[in-house]
Length: 330
Image (tube, rainbow, N blue to C red; front, side):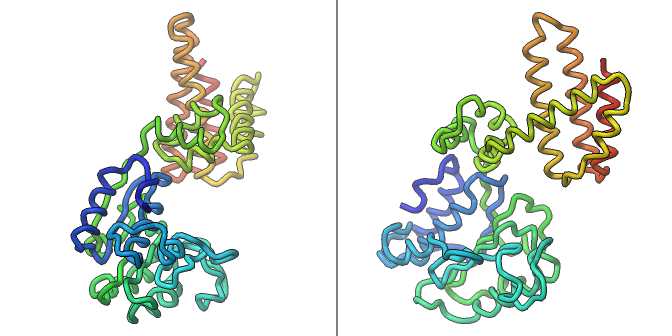
């Protein structure tokens, strides 16, 4: 069954399944929750149920329509093979497909909404049951794209359904929020995330840190446990602590000037540093309270650096300030 493989989201799935069983499926849903917790899996399962030709209200998962709704074409765009299930997402389509001269690198453009949604939503489904638009990372909708989508959300054709996926629902226009029914997806529990890591063959020694930093997101945990990510993160932690322990500020300045990471990636690396310091503090608290206190002060400094980045500090300045704080903490 399409919904049976989605883990840890009983409340959200209960809402969707009740709507399907009673035939009261809303025309526009807003699936909200952290990334990597099953929102898109649930959206695909709902799309399968809506186009299923076997008569199962929850979707059989076996008929040709169900299989094509879940399958993807090769290359770009990796669109569903079922013609009545379409994906809207930033940089999903080549520019020429949606009438643009360049790819959408920063947002979902109004051109995509016009080409993919408005050009099709006014017509009946190709195969008769329903038409489904899945909007991935809906917070990426530009103001123009959101406004272009709005009228269709207000007055959709019978059998047309929208599923907006977002981890930042607060960034959506209020008019979009008011016309979509929220279904909230929770962070996954630690046992579920560990189970996903085991199923993907991730070595056990990488589980603890990946789970600690993932905040209930299975996809984030898998990224954190990746070989290249693990090596790069460990090198970052070692470089920061080495610069903090140097005799003068020269290494700190050089390291800060080398920071060309985007802020999102740098925040992830800082959280890894914070987690390492937190583990150091916990391990030393009984046998060496002084070392535990130092690690705790350094952990607080790292937390402040993350806040500074979120408030738009430059990566270089944030790192220079952090290393200076780490040196002073001792």
